Image (cartoon, rainbow over all chains, first blue to last red):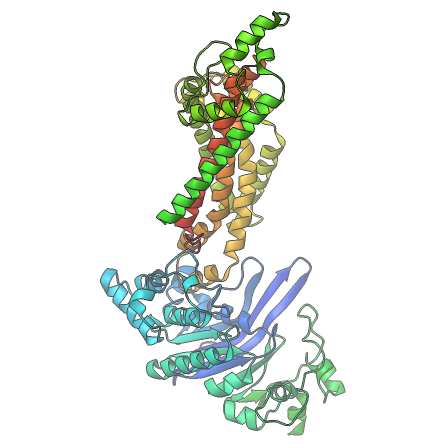
Length: 331
Length: 306
């Protein structure tokens, strides 16, 4: 399995990724054995509550886990035929911002306040595409235009504080997409935008993705966004992927009780339910994840077995799988 | 921009006027200067002659207007002890104080910037500990003591540097270092904490995610943001050096304004004290003005509107 050449159209294959935080007297298993694949041109969702390890998984993919403290302790991250974890820091930099880019959660803080927007979008162009001067500026203008920023010639010389939240997030997107990366990681990029701006932004990214054939990893806790944006979805809980499947399949027949609970907590337009469903309890403390399946204390269908042993991977056909004793026992 | 600078200059002039008025009131409310300047038991005549000479026989508002009028023409009166115009004394001594302050600030920045930045980048490493220990030492050693220790070591024992006085560039090293040393401590802490805040920010993470080398991430994206509080602090320090130099100038027999201040206090040379206070005050105001303008240049978020 280790050095299987990646045939077909797989762009990214993550195998058994573990990223831990080492604290003075505790180890936080933020990512605890995550495996998934992303095909070329595919949009994959990474869904879960805060603290489930989504963001840390993304940062691990770029090898940008917070230093000091966090470390990737195990696993493989195959980008085409290269294991990113084998690369030197220097080689890794050629991937960041060039072959893989990230859009972060908060557009208010992810742009540097003291440099112009043009300068910040131009950086990856100069760095990775080795374009300078007029040529670089032309590309920057193109990419600002592609994310539909009005009057880009004027906006180029302005500073981030002169942009609205939605426009800033477009700038961040332009910054990531200008080098035409093969993989775009979008880490809850719409959380801080209001709903109408959010919808515009989602539509924009969807279009850009379809035009360029970029693969996208969407990190979100919003299953509505997943339904709109993604082909596949991986549901994360306590640092592990508990269910993975095609979006339609998961919406139709969620296998894991946690997935079901997440789906039930999405507010539906015109639904008659008076109070929105809420998952009981708190996500587990990553310092002391319970034995067995970490979801059992909150699971309505928990059995004795769930408290003792983590459920194995049950294949659901194709690449779909679930980790749940209910499904495992049911077959 | 022009409008903003104009407004700030107007504010600065207002501040200067306030300081001058304060000096005028203070110098007349702590005793009759004519009394102070004449010998004890010298009789009424001598006092009246002195009062007339100082213009103290005129009504207060007239004195005040005359004082302001002279101030505008940079005339601060004459020294009582030797008759030399105060302006001349200050102009002769200002360069020595100013250059010493500058040298001290350069020492302080040259030590604290690298130590603070490296301390923040390599948290809890050896360099971070060295920075912490140096900051601790700098904060706990008063300049009159560390100055004397430096003189003993470098001038007396090793005979490497002149012990006192202003001469060639070597003579700047000990007083400059002494003056800068105490300030370095606070500055290391400030640079370190401000750099640490910035390094944790999203835009620094974003800069890394673009694939920029760490040196560019820190030198370009983090440093400029981290320097904003350091700039404010440096300016306050430069202002304070004008006062702190009273002690250090005395220890190193430095022919600056600080030494004049001490001498004139000892001799009760009122016009010189007035002059020194006005110069200290104006210097603070001028620095604040310059910093405001520099701030606006470094940080585009600061608008030039008022």
